[in-house]
Image 1 (tube, helix red, strand yellow):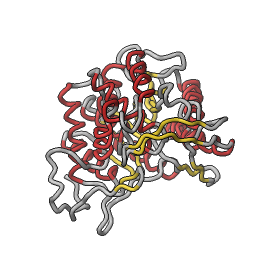
Image 2 (cartoon, rainbow, N blue to C red):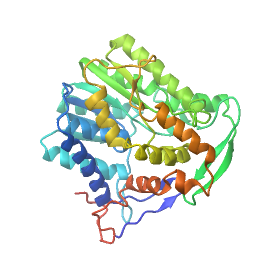
Image 3 (cartoon, rainbow, N blue to C red):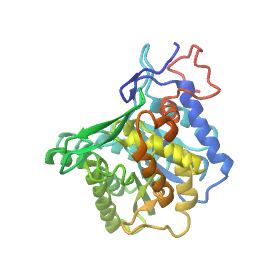
Length: 389
């Protein structure tokens, strides 16, 4: 079939197997060209391994640190006349290349929140790795069913306490407008913490510990985004901020049980993801950030961020902020970058957007998530959605 992008709102419902494979290879190439990464952590579990920062973590550890991995993600396989999800293609492309490089790469596709998938992952660790030295938690889901009682919770990305009015962007039309978002109810805020907070991270560590598959001196990382003052009203000061604070609580609890090395929240920079595209204000901020950081010569995508995390930030004595977090959002939140962003934000209109921000690159990065718009791929070719090279 000829596969083209089909975009509905902030969702692309198709994915291109050759394009996804090419995108995975380009990330691998970035790591390999930069050379080996010193690490004693050779047995890695990546939760949320199929896209974004999770996929980049699996690539960096496999091709930079020569680690064996077990990955967990929730993906849609191809069906008759329908493509798989991009993550499904990414997983297959990664596995093919990791195995060809002599590394173990086992992927479990299912609900990471469930007890069944935890048990399946533990069995895979025992069979292939023995134990794990590193756990990366990069699960991004709007919905979670609590395995203890079967109740399903849905996150709500809203301000907390009072309504917020701010600029926002229609990425399809390029129109800059104002949006007013009503505050979340207490129930919505609690549900968001239940989905995006640290409870499931704790449950994973508990299950792994009870199964005896945590190596002595293991480390776990949970990725978060804190954002700048421009996004705080809808993000840091909203329901998402409540969930992020719960990550810090969970990290402290894990450290109390397993030692100071055992859990770190890692703050990363804003990048284009399907999840971030759904948050009011954030896509507009993202188009500005791309342009400003590129002009300053410090632009980073997911693979560049995660490579810097493992190649630089986690080497030797780890520098932590006052909340015990590892900060890789330092370039984004530097005074120079933020001052320029605030100046441009104040001047942003539909008319000034093309000169102040980079919407075309933002759109291109969004399409790449699904395997579209990559050079060297013949998108007019007839491809089998069941096959990944």
